[in-house]
Image 1 (tube, rainbow, N blue to C red):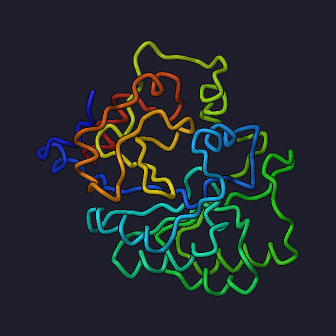
Image 2 (cartoon, helix red, strand yellow):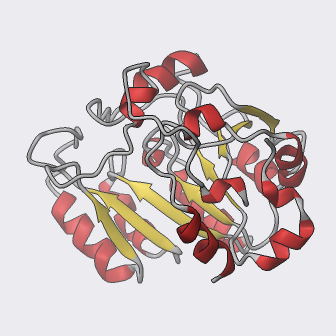
Length: 257
């Protein structure tokens, strides 16, 4: 089954935005192993030392619809790529809505001000938890950096893998462990307007849950966003196991409201 967003009429009806998610590094040093199958991605990608370059980012953005959101997150901590802040600034200057999901791992103290001065659309801070799931570097200036980001950015929310954390169980179905399955896949907003996840070399995959890199769409460096979407297929097998899906009633509201 192909994404419904290939139909222009449906795209006009929905208010959902086009967007992409970027993986800037071929490995992740944070390694939230309990809830994140980072090792599956690292093994399947096979280029752990590869970093997305500014030149690659510029080529990617040239193939993305104007006004899209660009999420700096992916399968690894974005700030471990030392060009991340400059990349976000470039995307903002090009008119994209830039989102950042980060633990702040890799951020240098001298770059805090530079990060705070960015006009980001929203920021998710993945903060330390009492169970030690996320391996934070323990910067002595970490608390100050968090407070400065909260004070400088208009939309900041938090993720914490404590006892209240609700997992989507990607750590189970990606690793091949038993996970709850629905007879039919629950509806996902990406069925309408996909948010492809892009690797450092431009390889593009349908979903941010696809740590196994099984649902390849093509390479965004050689084809534009809509060309990749039109020939892609919805990963229904994975959708049957993912808790990110929503009910049909919720889907109608998401699409039309």
